[in-house]
Image 1: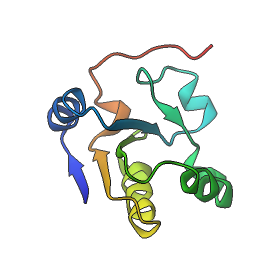
Image 2: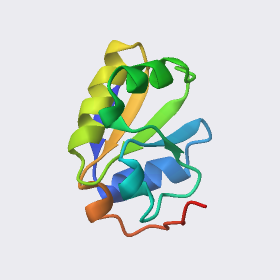
Image 3: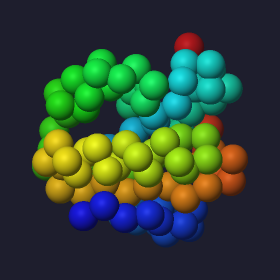
Image 4: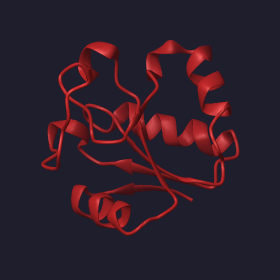
Length: 106
């Protein structure tokens, strides 16, 4: 299932999901400004490398995907569906509207 979730829905569902993986599809420059704790970073703009890295992920997990505004992450969820992922949830509004925790990347 591919689904767009509001900020509240995304955070609530993520908090109660013990099979969750958070996926950040922003650029390195965007990630340098902070990332959601425990997120995996795969840059959407890396083209085939992005696809290859997605293919290496466990398709049985539930993926919570975000970017800056919700556009790239929505596209990423559609790609994931085509690749055979069962569940991907897009964060509507992305990091621009995120009010949850952010950590710096070392």
